[in-house]
Image (cartoon, rainbow over all chains, first blue to last red; front, side, top):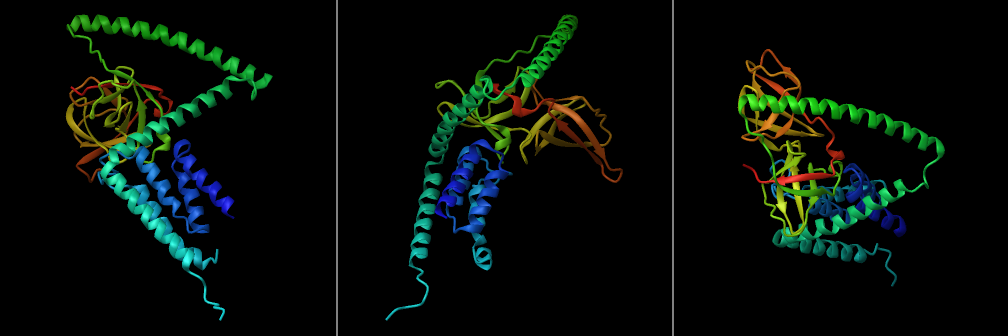
Length: 84
Length: 260
């Protein structure tokens, strides 16, 4: 089980560099649905460090994808409902 | 006595560690954000370059090719050479005609000078419409420099500079506003819409045609061409959609030049 989590995390991190943005989003979504995956915040932070300029997104200087990662962790109650 | 209540201790420890890590990360990014971004982009440049080299090496090797694909490649390349030869002839004619017209109008040739940089990240991989470019350490690159393809096509501006890398915000990135000129109107606001597209709202009375070039304000640099015009009779303005004549993903080298 931990092995799948590690593979998904490595896949999400690698896809930040080498794939379109929907792939890390999907992998992070799977991670948060299956596990209490705090590492998705790190994946979001990595995207922000690499690609976000000082003016932010639409002029809002906030780490948007890191916050999205935080929001994905909000899947926790949903995960519990699914008894995963 | 044995307890049958669920043991929540590991979950609490995990949550505490995660909260602590998020706190430390946020603190680092807030106070040393520039340093952290510079380090991340420099590290990523090594990874991107290695990946590109590996892809090129695999592509150049004959491991993944067969006779049929080589024949197809050969035919395609011969076709490309023919097209390129034809383009050279047409360009030579246009160049001569352009020089003659400039001579007639006594216009000076606009030339751009700047620092050459290599595009290391793929524009399609950034959710923010940005690209990372790498240049020789010590080059004089500044924020707000214009990023040119060739000498005349502007694709974005430098927003953050590190030692040997810079982050470029594309003019077509979602929500990015750029001042541009189109024939018959100056200082219009172009708003990026993502996927190599942007739009401008102009008065309905303004005559704009599909195919006309859009210039970066007060420069000779082109930011795109008018791809479509949509208007509603109830609105006082019409929407001019701007497209790039090429895919940004295909660019490997750019020129970083100071804004006039």
